[in-house]
Image 1 (spheres, one colour):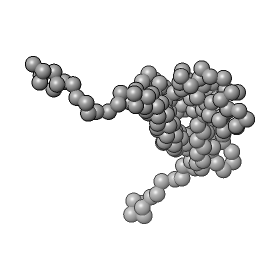
Image 2: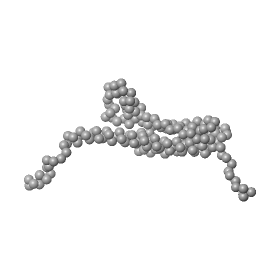
Image 3: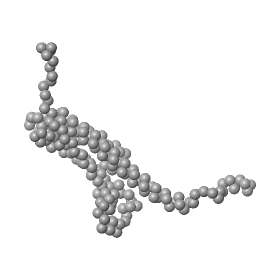
Image 4: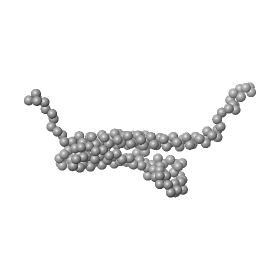
Length: 181
C-alpha cells in the first residue's frame, strides 16, 4: 500500500512558488501581444479598405457638379463607408472587441488633380484593470512615453490614419479597332 501512495508523491518536480509567481507575468505578456497583434491587423485592414474606398470613388464618382453634389454625396460616399465599416468588423461584435474599434471617419477631398481619401479609425482603450488602477503620475514620473502609453491603455485609446490618393476618372472614350468601321 505504501508503494501505491509513493507513486502519487514524488520529490522531483517544479517548485510551485515559481510557477505561481510567473503565471501572472505570462498572462500580462500574452495580453500585450494580443493587443499589439490586433493593432497590426487593424492597420492592414485599413490599408486594404483605403485602397477599396479610393478606387471605388475614382471609378464611380462623377465630374459634373449636379451628380457630384447629389448622387456622390447622398449615396456613393455613404455606401463606401458602410462597406468599409463592414469589412473592418464594426458589425461583428467579436471582431469589434478584438480590434477595440470605436468609430470610423472617412473624408474624401476632391481637388483639381487628385482625390484624397482619409480613413481614421479610433480605438477604445484596452483598459487592463490590473494596470489602470494605479495613479499615472506616480507610475510615469516625468516620462512622456510612459504617459502616452498609459493614456492609450487606460484613458483614450488610439487612432490609426490611412491616406490614399487617386486621380480623377476621366472616362476616356473606348478604343475602337479600325476594322470595325
